[in-house]
Image (cartoon, rainbow, N blue to C red; front, side, top):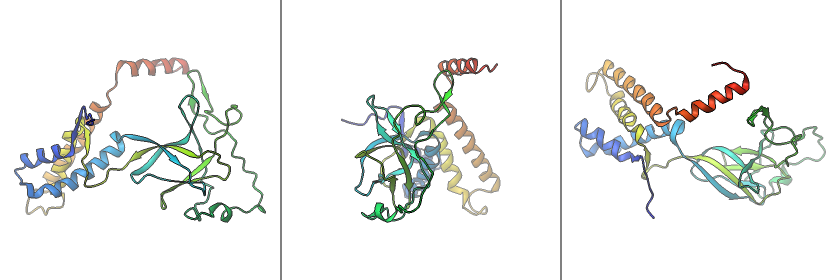
Length: 256
């Protein structure tokens, strides 16, 4: 079944639109593709990159291998009976030493050292339940404690604590585009990417050739204007958002 791109357009569409308007030939395509890819990374990371959700197996040494296109995580946890992800707690005290070795656990534990640290504590106090702020899970809420994790970006692993009991991890993450593939982006950002190409196409060219300092400044300003317009069009404020915002303020006693 073909992928439905709906209101998304291809990166090539923006590239060829700029090549046509600037009267440049196809021999400039690869330069423009690299510039457009940079624009995609800049805009997508902040606004429209999709979040992937995957179920990953836990390695015998209690690590999890990150996907090749992993950029940054939004959730790391396990599933409950309702299909919701119950997140693990970030523990930066976990060491990443020996996490590429099968004997990681035996090499990173020292039973002679006592620690008063207890992982079963409150995880978040900033969860809005509709009436007030409370902890999302963890003692003393009564929900079971799942475990700790730490991301080892250098080795591409999730490191888990020694008490983790599950055979899998649910990971929601921002994926990183790979060069040489077809990419699509929301149509609202088309003019912003074309403006980025206009700007970056001459930014490194000496002023004595194509474009002076004023032209470069104007193209830069045009790009950021189109970027603001794209953001407003991509995620506009609607009546339901305003209604929820007003209800929240009423609960908190905030006057508009």
